[in-house]
Structure formats: C-alpha cells, structure tokens
Length: 225
Image 1 (cartoon, rainbow, N blue to C red):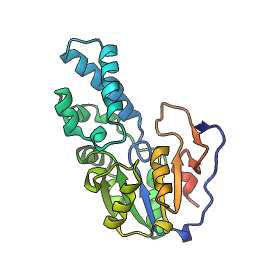
Image 2: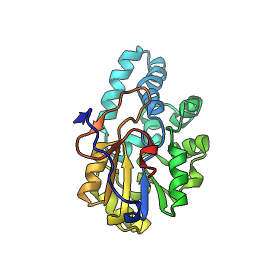
Image 3: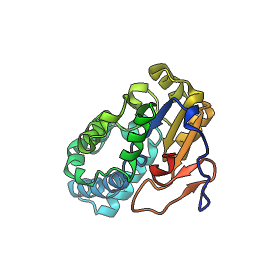
C-alpha cells in the first residue's frame, strides 16, 4: 500500500555496476499514457462505435484489465486489431504530451560520468519505444534498450529477469532497478535483484505516493550522490 512516509535510498554507487531503468512513469511522465488510454482512445473508440465516452471508457477498462501484466497489454498491434484503430498513429497525434521527468537527464549524465552501464528495460511495445525515443532523444544514453516482447515475458513475472540476465549478462547482486510499479519491483526482489528503487510520482498530475516496501524517490536528483 502507498504511504506518506518515505524510505530513503541508502547505498553506495561503488556497489553497483549496472542500472536498469523503466520508461513510462519512471523516466517519462505517465500522464501521457493515462490520458491516451483512459481518455483519448475511449473518445475515438466511442465515436466509431456510437457510444458515449463514458460507455466506451467502461468497455475499454474491462478489456485492459483482462490482459493486465501480460505482453498483450502493451502490444500496440494487438490493440489496433482488437479496437479497429491505428493505435501507433493515434499516439503520434498526441505525442506533444510525451514529457521527460525532471532531473532525468541530469541523472543519466551523472551515471555516465561515474562509468556505469545503463539499460532501458520496458514493458512498452517496440513501436511505443520508437515513438517515445524519437520524441525525447533519450536513446543515446543507453547501452541497450530491451522491450518485454524481446524477452518473451512481462516484467511483473520473475522469469523476465532470469531471461534478461541472459541477454544483458549483468551481475544481479550489483544491479539497480528503478521502476514505478510495485508489482515489477516485487518480481525483481523475488529474483534477488541487488538494489530496488520505487518512483513515487509517475504522473505529474497525481500526488506523491511512497512505497512502504521499497526505497522511494520523487525525482532522480535524489540519486545523484
């Protein structure tokens, strides 16, 4: 459960070789995704199917929840087929809402300066990744970008991390993961990932909600030490 009490990160960078960073809600403001799936897609879907936005929203939320924590949930081709919409094209129409969180670039620059490996590890579909990296120019900072579809499992499942280790060849005990989803961090904890950080304000439109289980940050300047 979320809490108003922060567990502050307490570690030494000398104990870490590799940093794994989630994208949506962690590096990027999740407001874009919340607006897109909860407001914009229901509006377009409703118009095409003679439904009110509220009727469309209720229908789509049921469909979303049915595939939550699976690869289908983030698969743009799946949703294009299911909804009869060109989801990548719709994302591009509102891509002005894609924003990088404060201090992310400062943190990435800091990590490069202290010589650590940085990988972007996301459940997002490869087409979503392409749209967002093109919009934000964050891609140059990463040694490797890995989408869950490449791994064959969503990050919410511990098997994801075993497979990812086979792809990236990191030492799990000397690796830090930052993510805004507690279920993802729990799966990484079960896998025995060395260092876990919860991002407590994934959307700029929502209040801070710290984790009672994991060290939390609001912005990445809290990890520049």
